Image 1 (cartoon, rainbow, N blue to C red):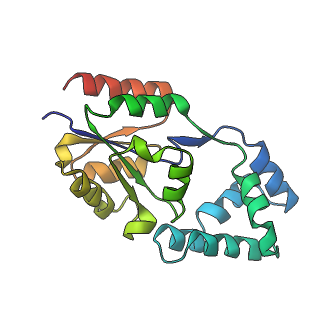
Image 2 (image 1 turned 90 degrees about the vertical axis):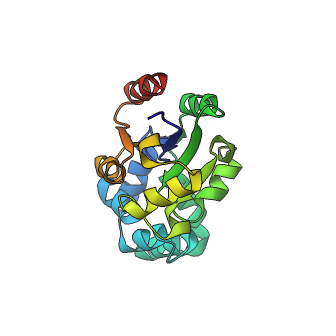
Length: 201
């Protein structure tokens, strides 16, 4: 069956941490390992609740700051340093843009409620025909529900869709509902795999 839709993850795919130094320096400031700092921000109970939309992104960052006994005024500088090494892959942006019109392009992201605003600010929202953000729908990858919601929004069947993500468990999740998954483990090789599949349409 022909591929009618391609869905992409955001963090780790469209935007990646290319420079670890800013986050490393932030961790060192609080006598933490890099991995522990990441875990606190991305994998804590507060982060999980924010990803499900149970609390806002602002509330999550307030919880992070409490951990370090920092005032609310420190929130923006803290976040700016934490994400200081993150870069949007402009080549991938242009590739997704080139797909518009030939296939449905979508986003499926485990993210807090601020992502849609960030995409709009960075002029990335128009890359996608549909956007499914976990905090907005109350479901996170690799739950089958989030993939089914994305397919419903796109009005395509699972066998007509591909999902590109950097976590193996999220690829397994999409495959469970019948989608094709491409693991984004190397930008050029992963996009080459996607391109070859789309050329077979």
